[in-house]
Image (tube, rainbow, N blue to C red; front, side, top):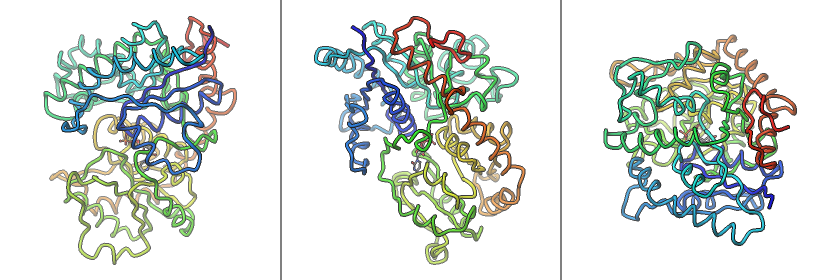
Length: 470
Ligand code: UDP
């Protein structure tokens, strides 16, 4: 029997759940039926933080399966989480699909799995269900996952995923240089954790990318032309943004404090420095204080997201007298409606850790960046911003590894005065937003992808649309 029912499964992290919930809403608008499968922990957080009046289940069916982490184990230990999901989730996912297929008229016809949930390819193969992979990072990151064998053959990494030499690599001459020490499986923790990440995410992700009929990602041809030429299997459908298609921003783990939007309404046009470092970045107390003192020194309005846990296990302490000195010039919130903030006319620039979602959100709104990458692909994204698109400046650390208050003040001043960077950001915004207009590249890719799911065709679309199912 024909069915349009897909299962969407994100990795249990904020930067994966938000874009996949956005993508899932686009799928439903185009006529697919979506069951969205979070881990129980993510599910609880998403439901608790959902403040809108309507029920999330009006958009799609939200379900949860356990990640296998016991109450006494540490979910922040990513090695342990990866291993545990790999062990516990395949059976649970299979059980869920069997239950849906027994009770629902529309059987699951395709699984859309996060690129960090590669183990799903085995479930899909075992159950004879088609697989698509979704990458919440750049296409270049997906390309790394698709090049693991080449990286092994070229001895860039060893069989544990550990970089062999201390040097940058390029997958091709026009792609950005990457530091193998910042590959996902090499940058998180100690060697044992890294090995678990390499086995569970790197190797399984590579297998899934091979098994999948189709790979979709939140990017555009304009942003990464070389990567899309070299990897035609990756279909860009971005930018995924709530304000594009009137989808709702959903999937947050924390409650958004929208008082900052009221505060932004009272600020002058293009005057505010927006400072936010995503969901995972940790600052030690020294760096936290230095950032506060830098924001104090710039003497301009700023909106700063200080996430709970941003300073690790202990609560952050502001420098003496900081709150009194900044008064109403600064606004601090624990979680912002970021897409709305970046779309606000008062925002002048974005001091960011350059997570891919933040990068796409800043680019899509034409906002110049001050780049402060923390780990993983954020360094690669900062390279795109500063060296490829030329829409921002990097913040440099001093000899002791600290970004000083003077560096912060100096780079903010340089960026604010730099009309070229501002113009580049606006031009890029125009080009990127054009790609989601009806009939243009990302919009066509999304339609072709949904069509492929609906019609059950063999040939999945690629980014040349050469095998398009239209
Ligand atoms: N975000 C938000 N409010 C905040 C900070 C972040 O809504 O105060 C959202 C942001 O819009 C983005 C996601 O959280 O969609 C973070 O993803 P990203 O890839 O930028 O960083 P990660 O958290 O994965 O490091």
